[in-house]
Length: 285
Image (cartoon, rainbow, N blue to C red; front, side):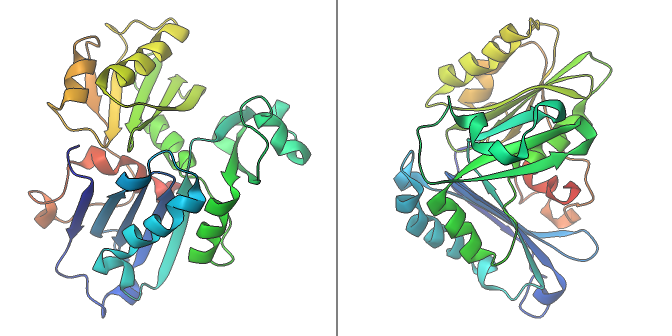
């Protein structure tokens, strides 16, 4: 997606209407996304902000920039009845229930992360008999808790994983790549059970292709037979899309099947539905 700052706002969203709406927010380590939804499930605004100036920086440096990005849209300042917060960063892993140890969450990252001031959290995924375990940078966790006082830290990957299940088809395997600001989340399912979830940084289309094909190779999947679903910040015909299409036969754009919907007026002004796949699966959490 060529846009790093994207807004779509319905003219009906005003200070008078906002108290009957909920603002759903994902505060990432590289971007912020939020959407306003009314009581009938209509999306009245979506906002996407990439942190272009501080890519790969520690969150204590990102925080002030993230605050400015969040506040740069008038939507943020409306008096919403509720605000639901999630965060995103790459330090997450899936743990089967039989291997889960609640008292030693840091152990799952001992070989992956240097010791630091992390806040460790877990979230049960009962439909997969597994837990999503996250190691959140301390500054990122404090930033989140300042925005949502008293809220439990929740990672948006849980919503993405739930969304991936809805894509499972008659094929034996399902592969989803969700594109963020220079990061890709890759999910591999066998029927509707998880085989793999991970996040990789990329700087160009060749990097993205490498990580996607690596997932195919790891599970001995044929790129000429197994569909690749795409979501997030990738547009049809873009360089990223063309590079993937040169090697993968069947590429489709994922659309959420959750309870939210865009009003008819958004058809020619909002981004394609796959760009909001992560956001639109948040209420299924």
